[in-house]
Structures are given as C-alpha cells and as structure tokens.
Image (cartoon, rainbow, N blue to C red; front, side, top):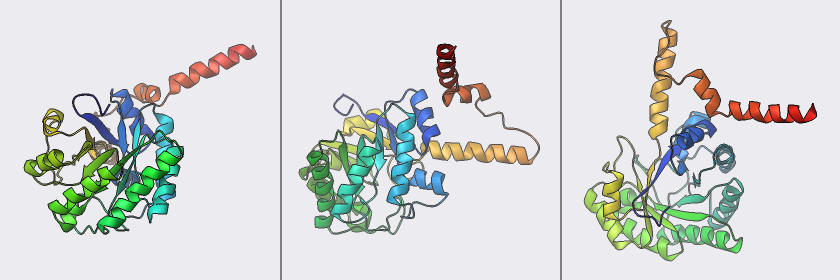
Length: 279
C-alpha cells in the first residue's frame, strides 16, 4: 500500500466494533491509537494511564474482528530499549501489521496538547533500533513507525534531525508529529528519506490537507486517529439526550444492519451447517 501512488488512508479505530465499521466502509487499513483506545476502554485521557497489557489486549480484540492491517500505537515502547523489544513481540502476537514507537518521556500524552517532554535523541534512536532489531531477529512481518514529538518540545529543526536518525536506524516509516504549517510539512517530506506519515486531528495543530495534497508534498500515509471517536461520541450524546427526553434519535443504524455488521448472519449460517451435519 505504501509503495503505491497516492496516500494510504488509515482511520482510527478503538475497539472491535469500530474496526468492523471501518472495514465495512471499504477502507484498506486502520490505526489503533492510544487517545481513542484510552477514551473508549478506560474513559480516561491519553496521558500514560493505560498499560502495555491493556493496549495489547485491545489490539488483539481489534485484529480478531477485521481482516485489514492494523497499525498499533505502542507509545514510548513502555520503557527502555529492552521494553521496546518486548513491545514489538507483544504487538506482533496480537496481530498488528505495524507498531508506532515515539520519543516522549513517560508518562506521555496526546501529540496535539501542551506540555510534552521528549527524551534525549540518543535514547529515542535506541528505542527505534531496538524495535527494528527485535523485528528482524524474530523474522516478523511487521513495520516499525518512528514518531517524534520534538517539534513542540525542542523545535522543528530538532524534530527533523530525529526523523532522519530514525530512518537511518531502520524505521520503515517516520512520523513528525504536529507540524504547524504547510511549509513545515513540505520541509519534512523534502529532507527525510523513506515513507512519511501525516496525522490529521480535527481542531488540531496540523493543517488539514486532502490526501491528494499530502501526496503532492511527499507523504505516504495519513492517519485520522480520532475522527470516528469524535463522531461516535457526538452520536451517542445525541441518542442519550433524546432518550432522556422521552424520544429516540433518528440518526442511527438499523438494528438488522448492526446485527449483520457484528456477524450475526455468519453465526447463524455456520450453526445451521453444523446442525445439518449432526442430523
């Protein structure tokens, strides 16, 4: 997908149902991001409160519900380079097609918020190298995406140095988080080798460009990490308020369509086949 012309589009999922929605809509891949998973699984902010085990478990549920490739958010790797190695193996067992490792200090937080702190460049590169080594030594069919939040914490030039170092360390994709202008986005794509990732958040810091515009700049992949979460929360809020007031929201999926989405028809057909064999 990354080697094709144009930009690969990865909507953000946060549970098995949202993964099924994305696949049914005709997408080719998806991103299980920490912000959405923390909100959906825990009802908490993306500030390092969700553990490695909780995220791996959620990714396993997501990959079990879809045939599409899933990019998994591994945060900082959950510790030092050896923790990053373990994270690679855990997310690979959970069925991820790609993992994202970032350079924030722990506890980390959402990339489009204030107050982020990053580790020294050498430590950040060591995390990426450890992830790549674990993937290669175990022969895993897994891509490594290396993210930096240094643009906000240390300046855009430092962020550029880091993504170049990540690419040199073997990262398959680099991700410079929250560039604030189209000029910064173009500069990142111009100087950094390999596949580049854009991250578009509604009301976020990065200019909202179309996939065609991102492709022209040199991006290979665009993530929409919270789009389904934002729209889903708005729909649930509307339904809850309508029920409180004695009515029901008209903006809903038909019950039979939801049954089909979660595989009720497949279940009935499979059960009927076994019942016929027993008879």
